[in-house]
Image (cartoon, rainbow, N blue to C red):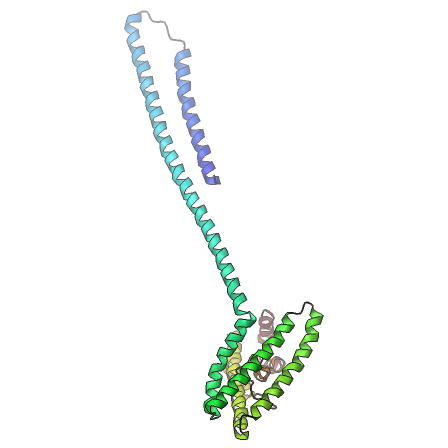
Length: 306
């Protein structure tokens, strides 16, 4: 029983006790009140009888009214209990649904992050890269098949190396393994290039390198557009000069195309991603010159919140 039901029950009991006390007091008063002496008992007996009958009728009506009100309140209490029970059942079902949904999401996350599924998704991503490279490099079906197999092996070697780091128990072990994995990835890259040079012509290898450079440029451009848009949306009081200076800054940024290697695009752990990451320290130096002190302080505060 909730607090509201207890409150209604207490009010009902108080009401019933009040009415019953009133009726009992009337009976007690009528039975104990000293009647006046009558000189003519026969003439005065009839009014006394009528009076008792009226009291009886009043008492009966009071009891009937009380019983009716009691029945109404009981019905309301019953309905309230049923509603509370339904709400409690709904909460129980809702809690079970939430628990089941959390469990389902956890299982999905575990599935998608599993090494097997990670490899599967990485292999699927390579299909689009392989199809694009076949046209860009003018590959034969045999060359395309070999390139796809080499890329798959490159992906698997990288993911296996990463899994070995994740399996490490302590932070110290992870640091040691990270250095070993870095060396292993570099060795795998050299092995990939050597095997591919045995299957493709020098012209195709050169075209592959140009392909990688163009992908870095595209990704760098998209990244700078995102950062520019995000930065401009941070402020609501920039004047036209400030907006143009910020836009020009991002427009002038160029990716680093030195020492780009083939086989980077479309594979996990693409070390070439750092080529289109934003240099935040250089950006801060530029903003300090363009923004007012209040605006610059606002930007720093917004950055710390993230």
